[in-house]
Length: 440
Ligand SMILES: Cc1ncc(COP(=O)(O)O)c(C=O)c1O
Image (cartoon, rainbow, N blue to C red; front, side, top):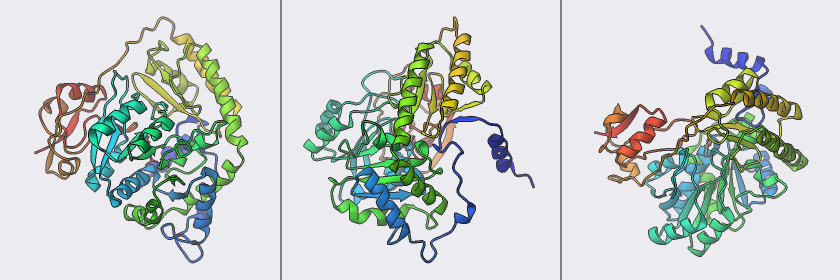
């Protein structure tokens, strides 16, 4: 019998590739499979911890200065379902959210019958992940919709960061909870200027520790603020257990535990931040336009940099550098404190090489406008309807059943219950989504 997955991984691991994609450990942490146990005597229980897991979660909570930090071994996706379910349990089942939310949020709302009032970006965007949403936009929408919770994504997949401090003030003034998808920003707490969502006023947030910290894929935190509604503290573990596996991975928990030690030595993140800020200046001198506001992410705008994604990605690949994501308008590279000076030198050489290839390249700017869709059914009703798969070009006027996304960035273009129109079909096609699921 062939072992296609193992064969691929062995080859990839042996090729000395510079990994500028998640996970943040970059293939450099070692956790023996002997640590892969289950909830045996003495090993504690993730959803009713009283021993070693409790102690480790408390360490994480102290580092992030939260009232409570819960470990997830199933990514931010599990934390997001948990946060939406906790809101529901205290009576909040209508949420205001910018349109660039990850599919795990839509899935949570579908499962929990939570209504979403979508906020659309005012101007044109070059990517479905992006969009500028201000505190004023949120204030206005809260007044209009009467929502008692706001769910925002910051940083987003391309590294844009929202003004969480201002948004949190607006939420408080309107009596609304603020929940942040901080999947990409677990490290923000440890920068020279702490810009973690909990510090800036969020009630709860999720961090995919695995994306930017030395943590195995799946390792994530659900943080609850010291200022949040105390009911969240009592219900969080039992709510999370409803959606989670009953066999949480001790390998992942061990990596979260090790990350606490790593994060307690703050210089690890400080020195990486300094290195990356300097590096970003160097590539900008080479004519590469980085639109990421995050220090640990580089997002090259291909239009502003006059280079096609294909040429840039090829140049990087020829230098054995593997990227996180690329599409027509952007190439995303994810750094972590595990990236060394030598890695940055290698990356700089690849950018120098790419700079020579871009001479004379004129790149077409791709922008589109996301427009509010007509809603004919609730997310839940459409999600559980009998459906059929049809070519995207025939979907105008039909109701979306299952939300289709391309992953990454896993951001929905049309959500369950919404009607496809000419504009959304155009955007779906731009992303190469050739079939969609519609209600029969
Ligand atoms: C913005 C955002 N939120 C949530 C998630 C889900 O995170 P996880 O993979 O840890 O479940 C992702 C995954 O890439 C993401 O990009």
